[in-house]
Amino acid sequence: MANSKKVWQGRFEQGPAAIMEAFSRSVDTDQFMWREDIAVNRAWATALKEAGIYSADELKRVLAALDTIEAEFEQDRFQFLPADEDIHVAIERRLTELAGDAGAKIHTGRSRNDQVVTDFRLYLRRKGARWLQALIDLQAQLVALAEQHRHVVLPGYTHLQQAQPLALAHVLLAYFWGIHPTLERLRDFYPRLNRLPLGSGALAGAGFPIDRQRLAEQLGFDDVTPNSIEATANRDFAAEFLFIVAGFYTFLSRVCAEWQLWSSQEFRFIDFSDAFATGSSMMPQKKNPDAMELIRGKAAVAIAALQQMLILQKGLPLSYQRDLQEDKPLTFRIIQELRPATELFREAVATARFHPEAMAARIDDVLYATDLADFLVSRGVPFREAHAIVGQLVRESERRGVPLSRLPLTVYRQHSPHFDASVFEMFEPQASLARRNVEGGTGPQAVEQQLEKARNVLQEYRSYRWIAKGSQGRRGFRARKK
Ligand code: ARG
Image (cartoon, rainbow, N blue to C red; front, side, top):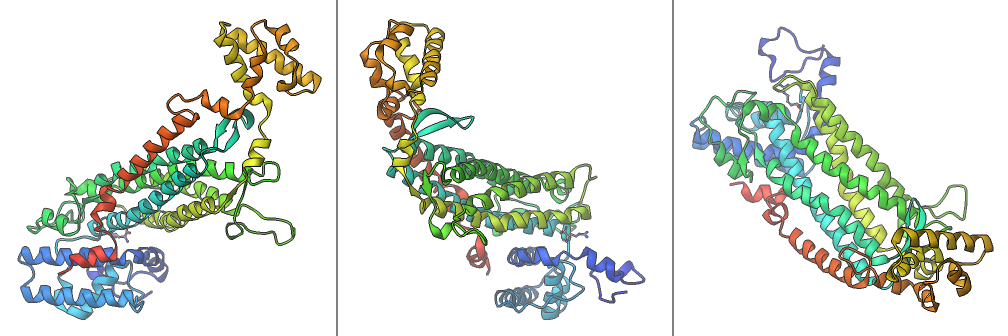
């Protein structure tokens, strides 16, 4: 038997078996929430004073002890004991060592069930704000790259087959708009995340007159959770966060695949900087786009985490169940890699070299097949018929081994009398783009419009409350302590 003293030991004749104690410990993971737990303790102590539990002197002693504990964590000298099941117990134990009875009163009206979920929401708030900042930087980078590559043309693909010419800026902006919903979702999610569960107690609500609105204000929450059972039982906010992350990675993984292809010898559209590539332990010539592959690999981990979070909750009766302790390890792993992955991607694309000549050289005449059909349409031929005529011309060029633009006009006219010499003006990349100034298209004016939109959106991001509020992080919590 382990013979450490537990916070819940009263009704037990003996302590937990060593294996039970070890198995139930979560402190290795939840200690990352020490800042949040201290902030929550400060706010709770103040609420207990207002509820008449603490005297002014006790409150002072508790706040001073919390300052000491904070310094111990900051200087990496906080000592965990074997009986410290989780971060909440560890901090309460230390608080009691430092402040005596005042420390032993801190858990009045409170449960780890409302405490853990409050810490968790605060933690997601702090980390989410930083990720949002990294996302904004990434979006700004994509806009800057698009601005720099306005006049570069490359082949566009569907089914990985050459399809139509594209402006590189348009492709880069496709990445911007693909990431955009992640930022929109974070903004929408914030008010749902930012509700205070504290005061819910174990499941029924605190048994003391706690002013939860005051608590919420003190901890920078917008509102309080409306139901103590739901507040302690539910991890929907964590699942929602993981969905946002999984959606982000899923899109990014496709961009990574594209850039991996682009960096291959077959494409040579880009070269990654040496700083963001790796070599082979065996093949001396290799320069591998590992950054793209590693980030793409994280998509699998993030999607799995979302599933884990949903499965963890599926079928659990309300309210709190200990199963829920698994919520943090799976979320924390994702969070710890999130900002680095976002920054790595940004830096890898920012430092990559584009090869516009290689892109231009890859533009095959077949990319203009749609333009040729459109040419016939402009001369009154029904599109379906025009499609068939150009299809036959493509076949003819393949049969002769001659590119479309080199087929003699006589051959064109054999297939349709509507062709004349001006058909050869179709084989010009900028002209092809210029025909696609439809809003959202790859034409130069459309891309300018799109850039303008992206810049405006970027400006809007910067005023998102999550960023603007600035109540997160160590400084935020410290500013609030009094
Ligand atoms: N370490 C626990 C968790 O992460 C805290 C809540 C424990 N509550 C309880 N009644 N055992 O979920």
